[in-house]
Length: 231
Image 1 (cartoon, rainbow, N blue to C red):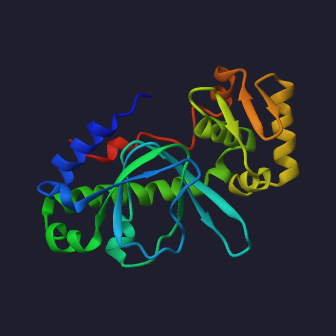
Image 2: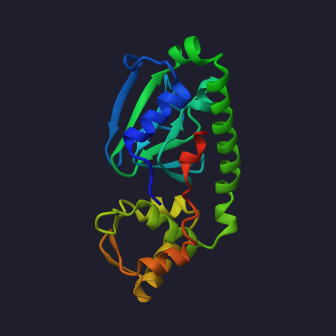
Image 3: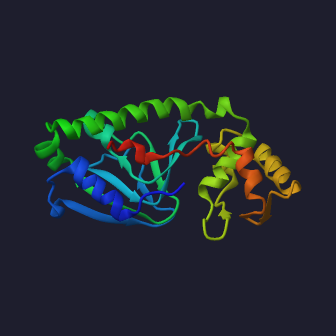
């Protein structure tokens, strides 16, 4: 699926959501692959609008486990729920490639946008979708077999230029997919035996992209985030 460019998303954001917000109030930021945009528990001071790039969103639990909630690409808002509820970040957000975004301080939102009906309308749509998606994605480990979750994960984090995936930790991936290290290794080996992927240490190369999409049912972790923005 083709996503809007940085410039297209920026214009949409300015014209449909932020309206007359001066550019001097918008702080551009760039995150590299592996950078944390938000850590769970952070006390945020700005709303972050991701305009290009892909991010991974997950939660940590007291037992040391993590759960992958969603992978998002395109125009994405971070900090909206935290702003309105005045609470720390609920999830961690990590860049999966180069991510370009802008930040807008909560204090400006409170003074200039908090009572703007059109802005609040967009926020209502955004937050409502997040609530629905949280329920949906939190149940993926129950709804789909590991093969589907694994194939979708590989499709989501692959390098688009080389069709490769670099896994920093099999244990972390197993935790995020809600399975054990050994079970994940067995399913990776099955993908290798079926000539769908080939592994070299922690690097995975996709050999049969069509079959991987079929196993992943398209990609259960991704959707079109640009539908958040109305109009």
